[in-house]
Amino acid sequence: MAKTNHTRVGEALELLKDGLLPFVEREMRVLHGDGWTDVARQSVPGNDRLVSRVKSLPRVDAHALLAIMWDQWNVVFKNTLGQAERSIVSELRDTRNRWAHQEAINADDAYRSLDSIERLLLAISAGEQAAKVGESKHELLRTKYEQQRRDEKKKTIAPIEGQPAGNLRPWREVVVPHKDVASGRYQQAEFAADLWQVYQNEAASEYQHPVEFFRRTFITDGLRQLLVNALRRLGGSGGDPVVELQTNFGGGKTHSMLALWHMLSGAKAGDLAGVDNVITEAEVKGLPQNVRRAVLVGTKISPGKPSKKEDGTVVHTLWGEIAWQLGGKEGYEMVRGDDENATNPGDTLKELFNKYSPCLILIDEWVAYARQLHEGSDLPAGTFDTQFTFAQTLSESAKVAKNTLLVVSVPASDNEIGGNWGQQALARLKNAIGRVESSWRPASPDEGFE
Image 1 (cartoon, helix red, strand yellow):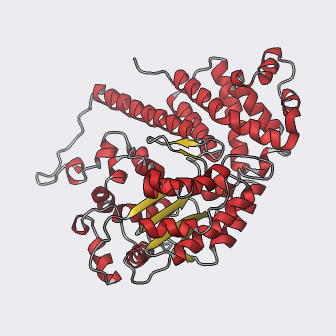
Image 2 (cartoon, rainbow, N blue to C red; image 1 turned 180 degrees about the horizontal axis):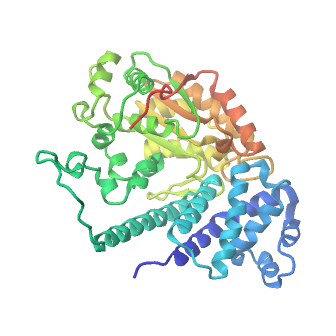
Image 3 (cartoon, rainbow, N blue to C red; image 1 turned 120 degrees about the vertical axis):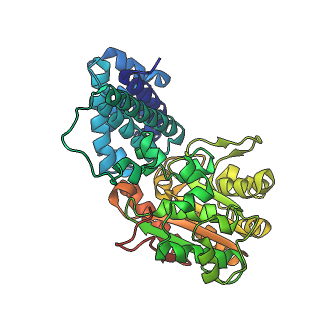
């Protein structure tokens, strides 16, 4: 039986609770210490049930957590999150109340609620919960479009006067929509350029498979320069070792990283549209083979929750994640001590890159990750200061190691940066990698990727 909109929103609110709980506790504890629960209880006065739930954290619900965030915003949460997230918190408080009072929720309202919940979860790096909400959101769209198709079939088409010219073909035969549009997945295809999903092999085919990706991609001058630089750098014939991507939201950073990921996936150059010209311009013999690739997406990796891999390895930090992705368990052993103690790995990074070269390291949404490591957070991922010592070490190691390319995306819009800690994280990140980076923009104003 298909889920109702009310059920979908309820499940999403439960996921929101799971994602918010450790974040709210962590941020409140930094400012208010062990007595943070006494402060939190002030956000739910007059409701004995909710007050008691704050004392028993595993049972607290989304309503209480959102109330705490709203009341403590100026004191606690504005330092980590931005105005956009504050607006979402306000909206979701209303959403939760409508859901709790059994008000009717249509498909459009349900989609908006799921989208807002997903955005807030991503802002706090609750990637696991955000992915589940995203799946529900896309399933809702498919259900909606399927219902619309069924309704259209039931309509009786009234005859119209006149006859078309004998040699005039119907527009549906002249302009055939893409399968994603015809099947009602248009919005999913439009916005699903997700680097982490591709890394996890969970993306839609147009983003997951190199051939399909390049078939749909228009290679702009900026993108071509990025790809040319990558071929030269990984081929040992020059090229910048560190590239900073900075554009406004929707400006092509993720698509550019995906282009690098797919071009260096081991696929044949002849199967990738436009790549032959890139090889010619780079003056290399072909695409490098056996490239070790690492992907870090700050909104999908939690700084407060170690990640257990399929081989049993437990990773705590970004440097541990890079080492494991490049070299598996063997690579991780090179930085195990620094990962477990959340200390900067130093020259070990250079040794790691040299051992597993050619290497490609892609880092997206770093600011969203780093802004949670502020003073007093005491997370497994390390301190705020250590994060940027690592950033400098990473960029300098990529420069001196052989055949290694580091690409880092940096936000340009306030919505992506977040609050005070986000501003500080951005400034320190740019300072750390700016010593050796090459700034780059994906496209000129009159160019587009698709």
